[in-house]
Image (cartoon, rainbow, N blue to C red):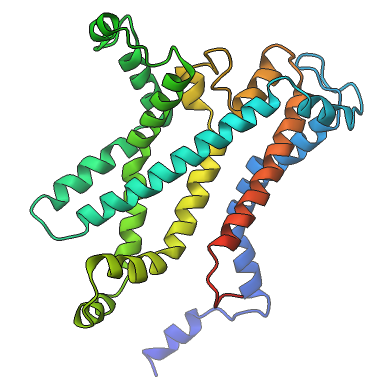
Amino acid sequence: MTQTAPLLRRRRPRTAFGGPVQGWLYAAPTAIFVALLFVVPLVLVVQMSASDWPLLSGNRGINFPENYADAVTHRLFWDSIRFTLLYTVITTVILIGLGLGLALLVQESTRWKGFLRTAFLIPSALGLASASLLFYVLYSPIAGPFAGLMKSWGITFLGTPEGALWSTIFLIVWRFAGFYMLLMLVGLQGIPDDIYEAARIDGSSAWQTFRHITVPLLTPTFALTTVMCVTGSLLAFEQFYILTKGGPDNSTMTVVQLIYNVAFQGQNSLGIAGALSVIVLLALIVINVFQLRAFRRPDES
């Protein structure tokens, strides 16, 4: 009794509201963070999209729906959408396919497994803006390491629309392939070995095993990587701003770069830029919902 009494005295009685209050206290920092960095800016953008809001003059009053009409009739609006969708499709197919291929390559216990995983993943540690600056120097026809070769062969990486597109895609693939390899590798390691063993006993070939076991069981991983890749590609900005500035002749103008140009260059209109931002947000919501429904398994409600 003498030993247990102090322990009993130190216990604090739990109130009826102790659990919910503690839960709210734990969630408060995240809720404040989300409110300040997402909800408040979102409300401000929606307000801008319905207002006559020049960059340097502030809010001049309601300008709805004129801002949305000016946004969709902008001379570069539909061209930027077409280019962004083209870039998104190409980048998503290459990154997911290459990520899966690299994951299959390094999942086996081989002598070079650790080296290959590290080598593929290292570029992911570099910031996108830093990687874009690095490739900008590599592509430079004046100061780049391939300047002499480019001059003698008449090659230009960023001087033509096709060259600028594929040069930027090469940068993105180099930067993100290791990251998507890691996501695919986690998905592959989550598949039980017993399933593969049963397939081998049944005489399934490597292709049949990959098609009927690996791919279906990687559906959640495909859903995650596709949503991430599509969303990141639709919001592409840094790589094109640093490498091409939307050129040549606005051929690599993405939707987000168009929003930046409307807000801070040329028109200097935060109202039209806000309308473009709201349109992009709604499009992202629709596209992500469609993707998640497409990857939903039949047994899921």
